[in-house]
Image (cartoon, rainbow, N blue to C red; front, side, top):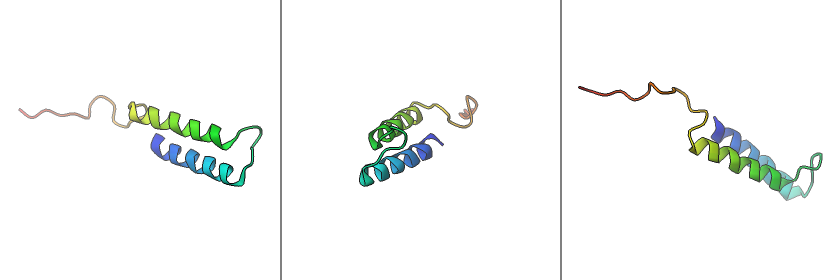
Length: 59
């Protein structure tokens, strides 16, 4: 879910950078950094579904 949010944030950042504008003082670079933060959280395992019971052992 965080990866999808990061993709949306990256898209907004690219759009703002291409048209060279700001939204309330927030630039495209701010959105890019926010997208990188979301990707780092996703890679770190934050917000993953399932929790601790997803691995099963066979005997």
